[in-house]
Image (cartoon, rainbow, N blue to C red; front, top):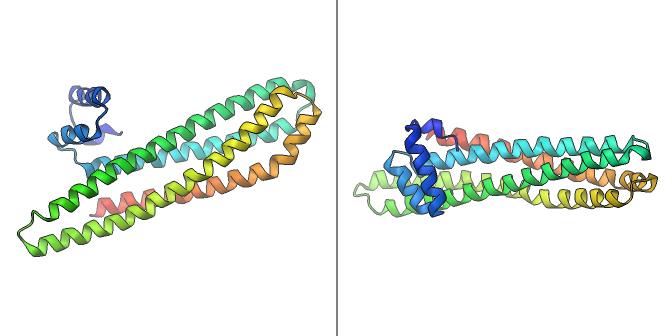
Length: 221
């Protein structure tokens, strides 16, 4: 979370983070943050930014992994062990980035659910009907915008596992077949892997664009 935006003293923020870690309770976390003027809306925007950034990092990592695949195809079989180690490192980094994407999306969903529940409940507290209608209209608009955002994020997330699965298979095969036959196998699968990664990158770019739009919309409201 980009805690600097909240302009709270560093010691207080450190305490808040340690409290969250110890309790593991998002509800308590939101309640505590609100005491310091940081509301669920602020946290949602911040988490959307983090999810967007994690997808950007994952996108670049998968591009790097594809480039490494192409490099492996151009080496002599005697140098395959070194290339295998590099390819395995790319797989490990890709899996770590994928885990980060999933975690960030979960964080977004958690705070969004809490925000919308709270917003809906608070509509009943209005005595002014005009203000209530205006707030309800904003709630519905924000829900629609969020629906587009989380849908794009989920579509991108769904593309990750097939890519990782194919990537993992090829790395595992190469591990035990450091020879020309392994290279031939990689060449045969490269087009499919390229297509899967291309689809993943396009979905991530759509999701990143939706995140930017959502953040801009929240700033206007």
